[in-house]
Length: 595
Image 1 (tube, one colour):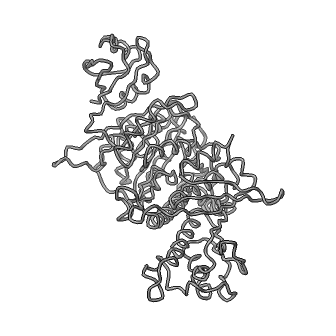
Image 2: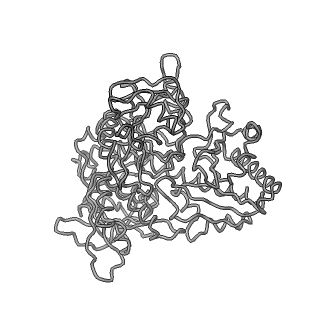
Image 3: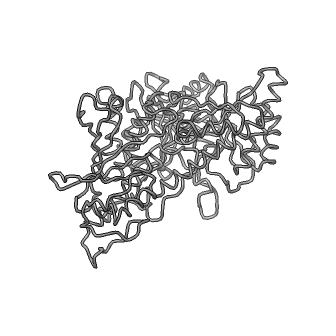
């Protein structure tokens, strides 16, 4: 059973009144209402009915002159770090919601429940979750009152009270929301090979044929392909298409995809509903740019190699609740399946590269919570943080407060309005979300094609602010659908440290470029400013730029440390050989070779 708490009741409300209200709205419940003064409890048959009751009643239905509140009933000892947020404005931007959540504490994870358009949040501690309940429940946002409630942990009945393999996750909830009751749910548990599932979008009219009578067809697919398949039948009620998630090895995913495509083609032929059924693949927006490639080269090659026509849904279709883009493949079954293999190969490579870059960031910025930034698809299995990064408290507690850094990021001049937002709302929200000072410098001339954004804050704030900046420029189409966002970033350093960054004969800076994939340049013949500082320029995509920035900061930190034995007591920055003296000058012999 799933118990509900019903609050904000008048003292005169009876169990009969509540029963009549539930019956009028066709909400199923079990047993009797347990009445208390001002509130009550009742059981629902399952989680779906509980969710429907919450969505139907909470803050929407009046009983004896008061709007009742309905939420999951959670005993104090079971109150967790997990919250559910409902009644969110449909066009709310990620950074706005993230900013609100971050005001209440450290967010570890934030994911969407596609069926009910709610957001599930996991905070770093129960206290942070409690603060979020107090501050955000009833919070007025664009004429919507947010509804926040606890998500109860389901404790498995293992010996010793340990959590089961799902670590307390509510049954039926994957990382993108409730599973659609796939008949494959009875499969034995096994370790899945792929981090990224193959996500297909299929016409609703063919879902029944894919599942088969009493689930026989889909059980056959899962058995033959050694895969786990979720058919999300209840997502997007009334929609013409439904998503299917396939979890298996790449080969297993491709085999299941072929079988599903064959079923759809046969069903279309038998029912004479369509001449052709294109293959539609869902991929998180973060990976699509690398699938397309520079000037569309990667996508064109896939089309040529597989003899297919491939189109990708526009960025404008992305919303807070859906960060996936639809890749439509048109061709015969063999050609479409070959294209699926090539497309998912690129998507998996992009994911693996991002995970590698993420692990570098979590190593360099202890305690950095990348899962909460929206940079990775929530359907993927986020890797665990590196050892030592999961401790409680401030990640910088061993060293005092993190050092404030100033970074200058250059953006297209025409993008300034989008970054600032109406009446400065966007840049203010971005600043609050990141915990950084963000200012846009005046244009140097009326014809300047770039504007400088000045970001000041500790390392994690820099990562958040710059990440959102890159994302906003992509979302607003300041870079084409076939382009990867690459920005130039400047950081200042003491002139005496420039030689250390360059290295003997440019060795260090060349190693920097090879390691990070960013272009790193210390311009020749710089004149130090009034603070005896010079610039180092970094140009690259987001992860490349971030890694380069952290490596350079690492070097500068070592330069500041008291020198012992000529090289100081700290370790060399990860990935570098021993470097030259910190007092090397900016002589032409020591300049890096520009890529």
